[in-house]
Length: 143
Image 1: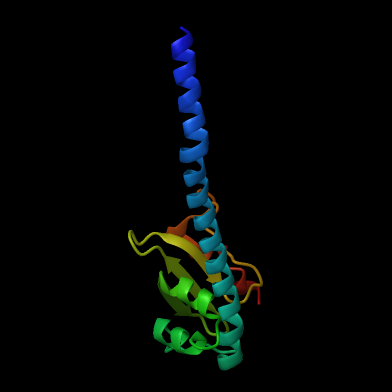
Image 2 (image 1 turned 60 degrees about the horizontal axis):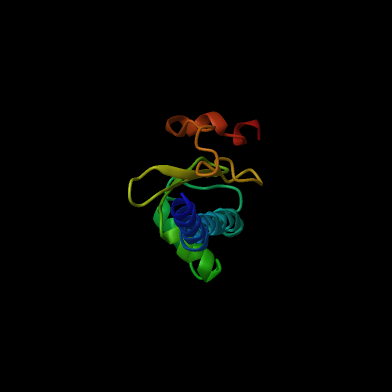
């Protein structure tokens, strides 16, 4: 009985020292990367409005968006954004930006450029958003 308790104690200590910290570092890294991504999207909006002022033509697509922010957005933010598939959909006085995870193509974030907050932080609250119908979350129609 004493040997069993000793063995459990050793396993518990091993788990606490080696396994648990590696799990929390993965979560922390993912949260940090997602924070960079959200900031990249948010800061990109300033550069897009700086270039296009108050009208985003139909030609404002992912390539035009990339040309607009490249060299202006800090490298760490730009690199984080470019790790993902980015869709840009012009809507006249604003645009919708949809960020998808590269491996599986799932939507992890969407944002309407007219608002000051990230409109769809899907990765943080996946059950809150219907990503097949992001238009339901459009705050720009009131403008």
